[in-house]
Image (cartoon, rainbow, N blue to C red; front, side, top):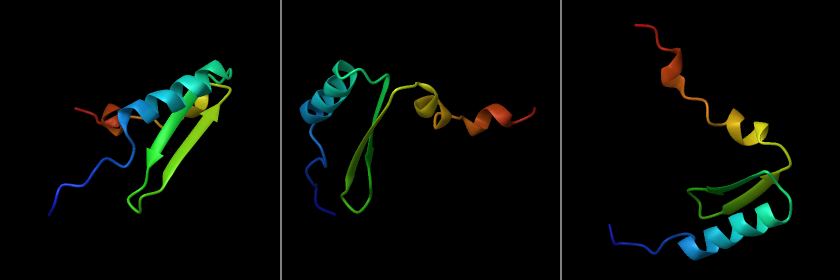
Length: 62
């Protein structure tokens, strides 16, 4: 498989995050889909961002 260029460059991702935070949003997220779509979303509350950060390993019992 040949090396492909990045779907989004790091500088562009930083610009998206910075713009969202400067606009007053508390949570900004970028999702890169396998089909090449780039989805950027922002929220006024951090609960949306934290809801997707659930670690399934935390539920394991030893």
